[in-house]
Image 1 (cartoon, one colour):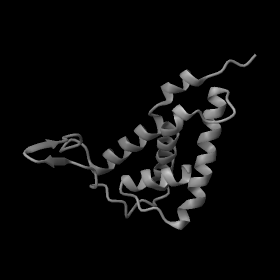
Image 2 (tube, one colour):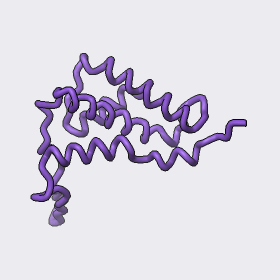
Image 3 (cartoon, rainbow, N blue to C red):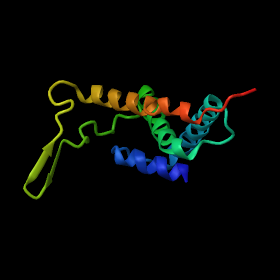
Image 4 (tube, one colour):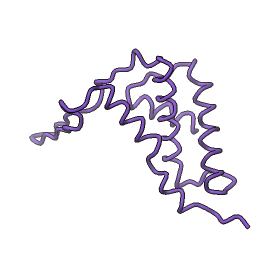
Length: 128
């Protein structure tokens, strides 16, 4: 289930997951789950941290791909800029003219890797 959710989340960012990515994703799932379990001193990832774990896995995956030069075909311009519903239009100016596509990607990766770590405290158990 986690593999499927991570795959869908990566696809939502515009990354096309291939069969070759499966091993790395499985490895990162184990890595992040073990990190959360150790940090919280629990035997399984709490349900409340599932989405945090999913994003952390995606962030680690994109970071590893970027560092190894395997994100060359990744569309850095794919980020949503404008939404129109009826006569209402919303435009997101984040990164508009102030950040390069690579800076936006770095920002996304950083966000995914660190978002939600503050929530770990809610699930920590004291070890006696």
